[in-house]
Image 1 (cartoon, rainbow, N blue to C red):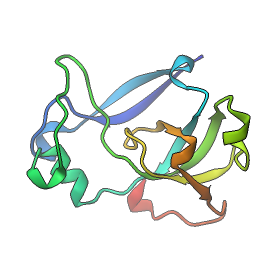
Image 2 (cartoon, rainbow, N blue to C red):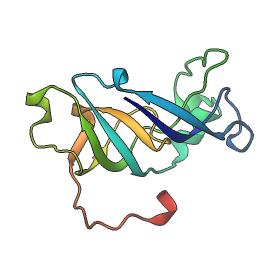
Image 3 (cartoon, rainbow, N blue to C red):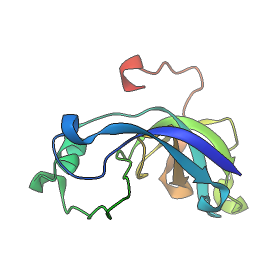
Image 4 (tube, rainbow, N blue to C red):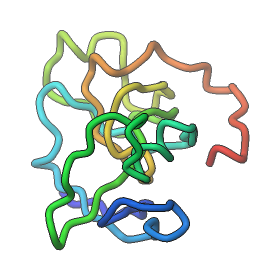
Length: 136
């Protein structure tokens, strides 16, 4: 199965207004491991650490090179809806498809979908919890 989604991406480091762009990405079912969950992201924060990492500032920590010709999806936390569970039944206990969850850390949270390890999911979020529209 393949899912097309939009994401904020960058191929180099620098000022966010110069390096960030929207792009369509593909997610294949092979990318979902036994201990992973596919989450459709509803909201994701942008905080100083994100800007420091994008700008390759020392405060952002070590910078991993972005291989030429590839795009990186920034962000590592957010709130979303579980769309698919990995096959590890023990890890999946307490989670179900359609459930709203918070997650941290999970690389790529600035996309419409992100693959999250079970141990990065925070307990379910109330389904009626209002999400600040500025975080969408």
